[in-house]
Structures are given as structure tokens and as C-alpha cells.
Amino acid sequence: MDLGIDQINAMLRASSVAGDPNATVEERRAGMLAATAAMTALETVEISETTLGGRPALAFRPPAAVAGKALLYLHGGGYVIGSPETHRGIVSHICDAMGANAWSLDYRMGPEGRFPAGVDDAVAAYRELLQTRTPGDVIIAGDSAGGGLALAATMKARDTGLAMPAGLVLLSPWANLNQVGSSYDTKAEADLMVSREALNWYVDQYLGADGNTDDPYVSPAYGDFTGMPPMLVQVGTAEVLYSDSVAVAERAGAADVAVTLECWPHMPHVFQAFYPFLADSRAAIARIGAWGAAQLGR
Image 1: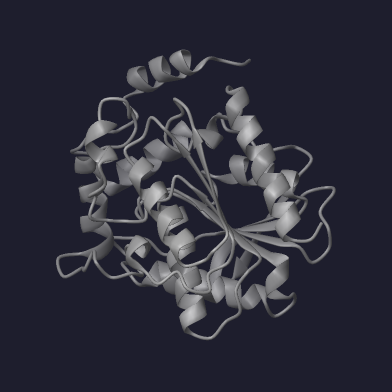
Image 2: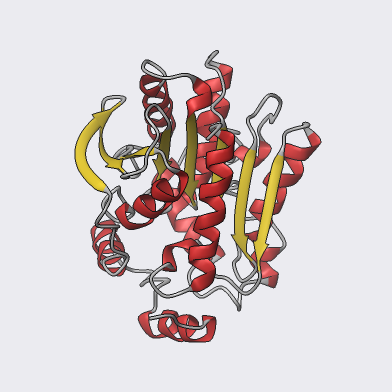
């Protein structure tokens, strides 16, 4: 059943999706798993447990996947919550639209596996994919913190001498962990899911007391974009992370990187995840699929 954005916003208000500021890590993880239960996976996509780069992962096999084409997906959740399980629905829809097999990585998160563990895990996963395919056969994607991680891991892969993937898909990427963009103020009332205060809690869990939010592998908006692959960035205009997406696009363009920035009016944070209810979410996934397929040479 399709809903309008006003109905989605009413649901978000009623669910207090931003969360209890006093909730424990375990409670927040359980809450995200419950909140994503309605975002079911496509029945036509085969999903199985596997490992990639030494970490657990879910493997996705769409019926029309082209052999050798791969999507590496990094889930969101502030580097603290979320998992391949919470994102199995959205990954199944994206890889089906792209016509590529996918791997959703269970990378290490804070507070148990603080930075740089997650970045290292993502680079290791990409490195393993390259053992059986060319870089031009791989798209790396992620949402929110996973979008920031996709960007940071690709920068580190480049810096360690790995060839670049065919492209990056960044959905509302959290790319600057200092929370300094103007949208953190101008979009604060409109954003029913994320706030500067909430993100600061996640920063503490991810980095610990000695963390450096200016490190480009932490906040890739500060990184060197030279030689980065083409990027598709999608963001809603009703989210505090809007400035992060704009900053990424500006930095990429200034470094002569091909970048497509799509700003979707009135859409919330990672609105693509609302595909069971919103036509715009499904349209955005279709655009991701078409863009990724083109980058993969399909």
C-alpha cells in the first residue's frame, strides 16, 4: 500500500524513531532490527550466509544477475547499530535493479570494534572481490554511516594501491563526523530521524575518547578525492545530513570526479528504505539500478 510523505512523517513521529537518548547499544540494535522488519526482501532474490574479507556477510543472487558483476554493500547505523540482516530488504531490491550479485558486509562497529576496524574490513572485502573479477565489475554502495564508510574505504583502497571500482553509490552519506554543515540547523525541525545530538553519541561509540573526527578515513568529506571513481549521491531535502551529500559532491566535482547528486524533495533520511510504502523510494532504487548497470557496462 502506497503512502504519502505526510503519512510517513506521521508514522515516524509516532514511532519516536530517533530513539531514546538513554537507550543502551543493545537496545538500539534491537530497535533497528524491529524497525526494519517490514522492509522485506524480494522473494526472487536468493540470500545466503557467507564470509568476505574474513567477515560474515550475506550474499544476494538476483535471478537476472550478470555473471561477474558485483555490488559490495555497507549498511548504515552510525557505525554502532545495523547489520546485513537489517538491510537485507533494501540490498535485495538494489542488486535486483542493478542486475548484479551482491555482498552485504558485517563489518566491525563501535564500541566493540572501533575505528579503523570497519574501514579495514571494507577494504579487505573489496580486495577479496577483486580476486575473481576486475575492478570495473564492482560497485561499492552504502547508506548513512555505510555511505561514509564506502567513501572512506575506497579512499584507503586507492591509497594502498588498489584499482578503483566502477562506481560508488552513496545514500544520505554521513561524511563529516563533526556535524558542521548548515543543514544540521536548517533541517533540524524537518528531520524526524536524525539529530546532531544523536550523531554525537554515535561518534563517541565509534571513535572513543581519543578519536579524531578530522581524520579523512573518519570524515571522508575532508579526504583527497583525486582519482576516485564516479559517484551517485542521493539525499532527501528533509534531513540534517543534506549538507554532507552536497559537500561530497562539491569535493568530488572539484577533483574532476564524475558525480551525480540527486536531491529528492521532502524525503527523509535514507528514504530508499521506505520502498514498501513510497513510490519515490522505488523510483530512486530504479535510478540506482540503472546508474549502476551503466557503470558496470551492462
